[in-house]
Image (cartoon, rainbow, N blue to C red; front, side, top):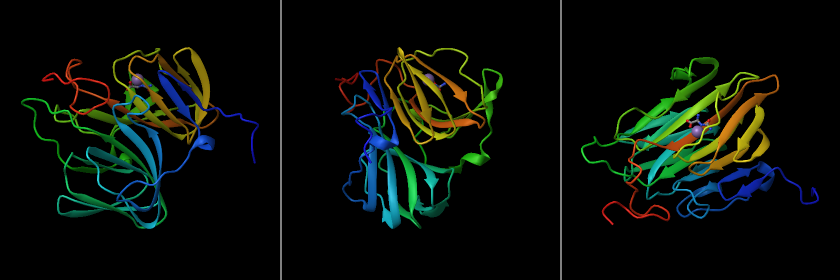
Length: 257
Ligand code: UGY
Ligand code: MN
């Protein structure tokens, strides 16, 4: 069925709203029995890559040149890393430092959010370590004291880590207390519920399944609508000096350059 060319999706210089009716799947080298929706990457202007991997049973991921973060949306993954085997169910997540050997296999039909970023080393910082966890086990912290808006940080603290991935849960009617404008860019996947996202000078109705990319300094605000909580998974670059930009990253020179 066609919709006479209509979609909620919208691409602007500093943001993308990508709704499922505009998703197109691609294969990736080294992956088997898997297709990918590439939501964000250098061609969009992003300094990271975010995709949804859709696996058939026994599907596998290929290699990456970057750090990799996995968050299971549906199904079950088997991850081997650091000499250990882990099983990840929905809400399970893993962080693999750049260059860490690992394998990923879907035990059944599965969907997984995959975020990758070239590592930006920091002089004097410890080496990042493999991490496997479960979102449900993470403490929910009220954002700026608002109990109706709770943040769970999935990545560890410490200057070894150059990005953050959080989930944010809004009770119906909860909203960000301010319009944010900041240097970090975001990749955002709506996991549950619905609301209104302000991106620069546009206000969009959004719902579970939608993806949003926000460029650095894109004005942003969200308010949850409906009778159920709204929840999203959100990536941001984090803990690096604004003049230090990783080698090989999009459109930018390194400090050493
Ligand atoms: O971490 C953040 O910058 C987050 N509060 N942004 C957002 O939800 N758009
Ligand atoms: Mn933000």
